[in-house]
Length: 320
Ligand code: AVJ
Figure 1 (cartoon, helix red, strand yellow):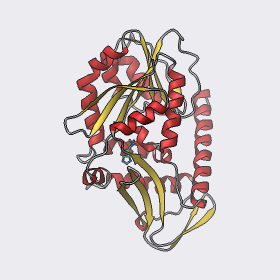
Figure 2 (cartoon, rainbow, N blue to C red):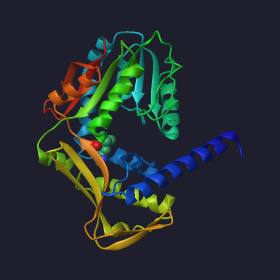
Figure 3 (tube, protein in one colour):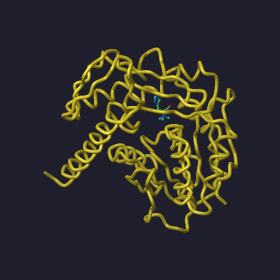
Figure 4 (cartoon, rainbow, N blue to C red):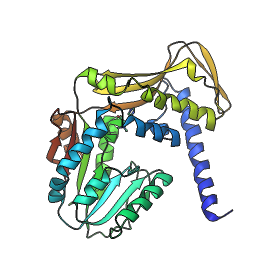
């Protein structure tokens, strides 16, 4: 076996162990919950890509539109000779809009998935042969420093997709504080965030008629079956998503349709009829809320662009 295969094997074993611990802890806990990041195995990531194309899921389409309309404004605010750091770059599709518009000294995509990072970096190297690219395989929630970046180059962060919405307010604040430290005194952050809007529109975005979002949630059960020798019967659980207006968030669960017992990773768990397991929050912001949150982390809301319907916003947050 070559070194690459050994390395991949080691990473996969570590990932699986992390998943096992999170599932066992999450199902033992009350209320039951499994962290959202585990939704994104290969099949989950493919289903999420399908979600982004759904007629009801306006987020991706709208953000791309805003970025396309204002990439030149963002480039002008950032100025020349910047390092662009992307948090959770995934397939880096939206980043291309900024790479095309900005005058960059460096692009540093940061992603926890080695696979995603390598394949998208290879494609970017081909399409932007003169742009230096430094891929960083790390969890952006805990990354402390990027020693490979020259300290003289001013840093601009990019956190698109309303990924911030997955985080509870205290976690979002921790993310912004960490980003501030990473970006440095003269840094800035370009943030994509989903806005509060009428409940029916929000509800539809997470309860699509084609059932793709339901398949995305229930894929977590499939993943437990495959990776942790689970015995979940997917017909005996259903996806549930609703807007909680008090907390300003979509809440997503899978719900047991009957009293049942399921084995996972060698342990038995009983579910009562109607019992649910939390999988995701998707927080929605309004502008004053966003402004106050980022201010607590030392950022200033310098500019904010939205679409005509005010569904989604792209914000330019400055530190200096
Ligand atoms: C990737 C967290 C932005 O909250 O809209 C979409 C995830 N889950 N449909 C979102 C998601 C179900 C998505 N984020």
